[in-house]
Length: 119
Image (tube, rainbow, N blue to C red; front, side):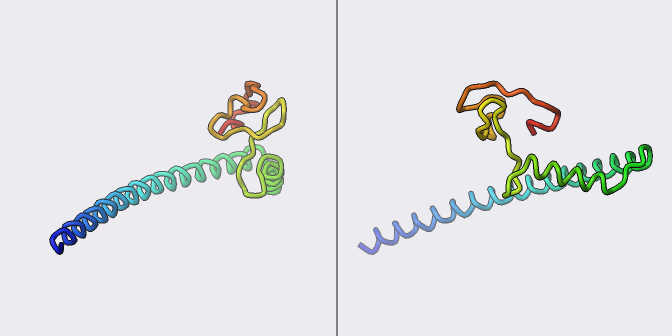
């Protein structure tokens, strides 16, 4: 009886060790992906800053113009949770974020209105 119990206990320990090992690999993978996202975000931030500084220097755009436009876009295109809202051109219902090109309610194909619409 004790031998069977010990065997089962060892099985449980081995299962727990395997699960911990999988969780560790997953965590390392997510950490790597997060680092890539942070690097891309930093690069995009620098790109935006460079473009804005060019616009200020060449076209004399004031900072207030950018602040106002950001507020307008946030109010128009984003929900209270801070996430971008995509809605059907035809029925107005929310589009599935994984299938932005076609409404799952009315079936209408969605046309991108600009380069940022389907991001």
